[in-house]
Length: 311
Image (tube, rainbow, N blue to C red; front, top):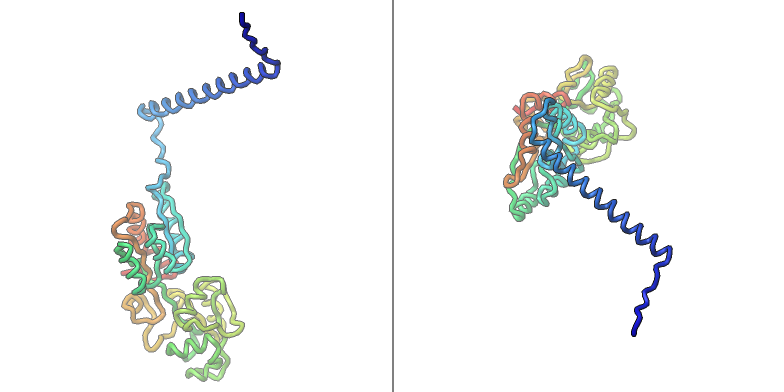
């Protein structure tokens, strides 16, 4: 006769077994509660309530990814987005601006919905888009333009592009060299960290360095105020601010800076601002935002920030 010898459980083994049973029981309870809450949520969603329906939570369909130009991204895009969200609170924006080329590359790679651009695409960029099967859809939203301003009492009323370049780079340092009085030229420019500082450098200075130690201001209004107080001052501002008392805009190669000359591309210091989308994969949220930017309200904001609205 054979006897089966069954080892007795030790106290520790018994405690371990009881712990495992309790753990699985607790997990089962939590799981069943979760299912119950889920079903309750479905039932509640289908039942009428006395309270008004809350606004829909943000979803991927509400999100707009924007990449591209610093000119657009520094002040204009954030302000337009803030205004748009007043009537579209569920809209989500992902904005990152480094350069126009960065935005167009992101659009080609499918990494954004909108590419902000302060120039037209190069031939190479257009070819790369075609290779990716992308048709660029262009949406003009305004223009970035800079007026060169002098003190209202200054007899100089016109400068050539070469003279402007040489004044701001320090090659020309006396007003008599450009038909003015025998007096030193005092420069007033934006602070080096601003996009405008670089923008004027590109538009008017052939990317050459500024003259040594110009007086800087944190905005256009500050430049206008300083030039209005300084008979020998020269600076730059938006076209609208150039009309402030005590200062005046000079024409460039005979062309007066105004909205018409900018939109007709006659005035040299301007860049048309565009938003590009992939025509074959446009999302409704992006199109709605672009329509807002091109609307009367959107164009008012464009003008308020010193840009030239699109006619």
